Image (cartoon, rainbow, N blue to C red; front, side, top):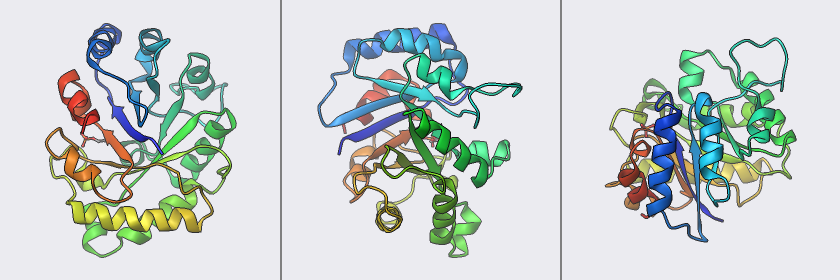
Length: 243
Ligand code: PGA
């Protein structure tokens, strides 16, 4: 299984800044057989990303999509267009989508089904809030998000899961290696119990930085990272990808 280093740029950068980032990135990044880098720029920068990364091993995708490919859905992003532009992945169920845009597990499950149907790879984000962790509900929350998010999934097709404790996202409060070990061992067990491939990548996300990446990557069943803030500058993200 390849180690996946995914960059979630959220609502940052314009097309010009995107092109500048990739032109620098291509000068310094050496692709390795055991690692896969994936960029998730904002939807307005997908074409700039597609053009910048054409002919490279680097993969990319959108941060969200709608559950239909076209129609009267003002403001949404079409997974078909992501595919037409040469994208490979779609991020689904990020905690900001769930908390700020009221996405439900059911909606996420429908999007997941469409993304797989188009032969794109859905990267499903799951994670507990601080009150949920403090009241001992972490595993129940993760199981619920997995079962509902994957309810329409095709087990024969590719997928990736990103475990992102909500309290660790953008806070600088990274989960401890022990907390990550416990969650990833349980997620690995749940995923295989549900009949998904043992080689489904399980990423960790939430305040991953160049100085904690190595330690977290050494945790069993951590197959990569989903990185927000630290993926916006070339040197920092490069260091994470080399950890
Ligand atoms: P962060 O974000 O690395 O800035 O904590 C991670 C994410 O939201 O995917």
